[in-house]
Image (tube, rainbow, N blue to C red; front, side, top):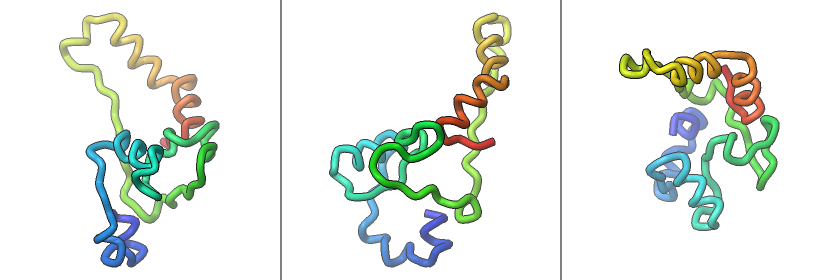
Length: 106
């Protein structure tokens, strides 16, 4: 919505917009053909960080506010070695490479 507004087309497109409950549902609308176009996560249509299925346009970062996602270790998991190891892995270079290849940026 921020990108459409910044480009000055939100008002014209507003009557045609359908919003999914999640990014997964938005992808399902487009993948099933129930929506002709849609905004989906690059990771849903990309391989090695590039659009591999269908056609796409990666929205330039200056057109929308950052979409921040975090991983946290809850107090109840602090004593769980598997939880600690998983968070350590997510913070490492191997996980970052996987996420970067899926189209995510840091």
